Amino acid sequence: MTNEDKLNLEALVKEASSSSIEAAQLSTNKKNNVLNKMADLLELNTDKILTANIKDLEYGKTNSLSESMLDRLKLTKERITGMAQAIREIVLLPDPVGEITETKIRPNGIEVSKMRIPLGVIMMIYEARPNVTSDAAALCLKAGNTAILRGGKEAFHSNTAIANILQKALVEEEINPNIITLIPTTEREALNELLLMDDYIDLVIPRGGEGLIRFVKQNSRIPVIMHYKGVCHIYIDKDADLEMAKQLTCEGKISRPGVCNALETMLIHKDVAEKFLNDTGKVLINEGVEIRGCDKSKEILPEITSVTEEDYYEEFLAKIIASKVVNNYDDAVEHIQKYNSNHTEVIVTNNIKTARRFQREINSSVVCVNASARFSDGGQLGLGAEIGISTSKLHAYGPMGIESLTTEKFIITGDGQLRHEARY
Image 1: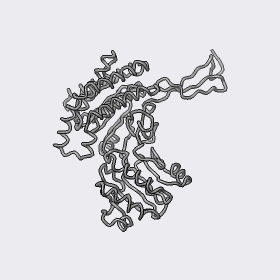
Image 2: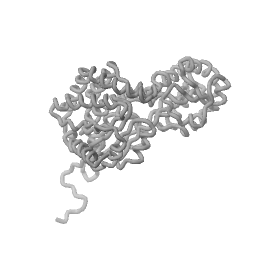
Image 3: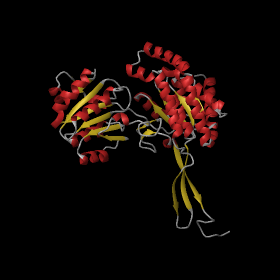
Image 4: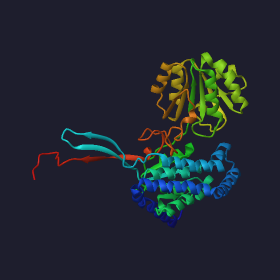
């Protein structure tokens, strides 16, 4: 980047930062009105968005993006309708800004409360998911924040089309359009510069591949909430309903293998391994899933390939799943604690005590008992659209909805109390 480019980038971010005061002061009605306008304009401009998305898909195919990446990148009329509906669901959620979350009366009579306030300026850094543009912008706006959006080159045309539509809604509602700012370049050097702008940006949330997440964490002066990889496990206990286990495993791997809440490893208790793998394993294979199994798994299903140590750490994002037969519950938990990424873990069991142990002992951000890993999603958990799934144990952990985009301040009300005896 030239010095002029750097200055232009800083000026753009500075303008976005200045808009955060206005964003924080918007009334609930004003925010909801503009969000509804955004949803309407997205649907009205479906053809324009799809035309831009075709350019990105052509770029992706030319540059040999994987099938899972192309699936994330692709927009359809139905997906755009889904984006609009996600915004309308955010409208229906309570406005967290100004909420009093806790009140205590101290012995001296002062009232001490906590009030939710916006975080300020949030920069989203993401790759081939154009729906993140509208989700992140809408969530940040409802929580009173300014959003700076830096998408990847794979979705540049789609992101630009969507951001322009969202800014149009702001203008039509007489709101500062800089509250939603798309960075107009995808150069890596520009990202380097952005990560140094801690004077203007309060929080960075990266969403994408492992390389992107590590790069942001290592190069940012700004606090980072990581949406790290999803190495998600399902443990089939000796007391499992094996038909349920089959359905949960197959949906978790097959429905959308390229998403972060897809299953990557299945752990099977030795007492049910033969029956489970002969049934579920063959269904997976028939659906085009490659199983990479331990020696015991291969004894049951000789046609599968051998698993490696590296496979257990891998987020495949494809029709691949690792398999391991374990001796008992403790072995399964030990494996999960070694290889997981703090994302989502599932146990299938009819033993209530075992289920409760799993919930206590596994500290991933989402822990499921007899339920699909695919529920690890803001919309499915009642948060509306999510801005990401935090795998950092900070103020937000797991799917991040509106409340996760606020912080709290103390407010104190008294009637003249002094900490020390009056001297004046």
